[in-house]
Image 1: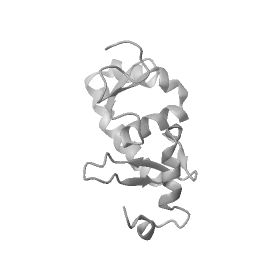
Image 2: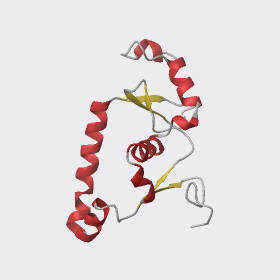
Image 3: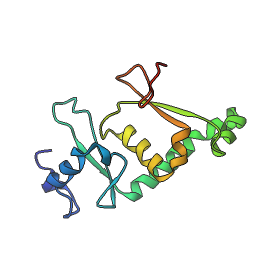
Image 4: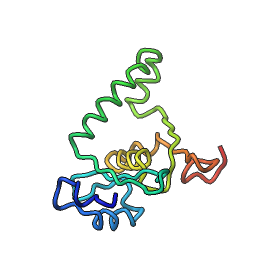
Length: 137
């Protein structure tokens, strides 16, 4: 990370600009420079990494995600169609409260399609209740 500015391929991206973007937790799920989804690692090695994902990468991730979910339709067609119609519910366990990949991507999806907020819930790996929920699960 100490050589981030030397390695980044887009000259409009600098470590200082990204760090300012990441300092605002409200930016989770928002695009940096209207071109990149930014997320961080936990820093288990001592220094959190900053990762940028462009739109082409996001298309690949989405295609892979949809391909992985095809088994839901195969094994439980009723559940699959309920999800497509917006009547199903999804839950995910992520480290929340930061710009971590799972948290960022979920926030991004809900920002782009607010109706998903009613059917998707993040459970924090660090908490015993869903994020934003006043009751225990």
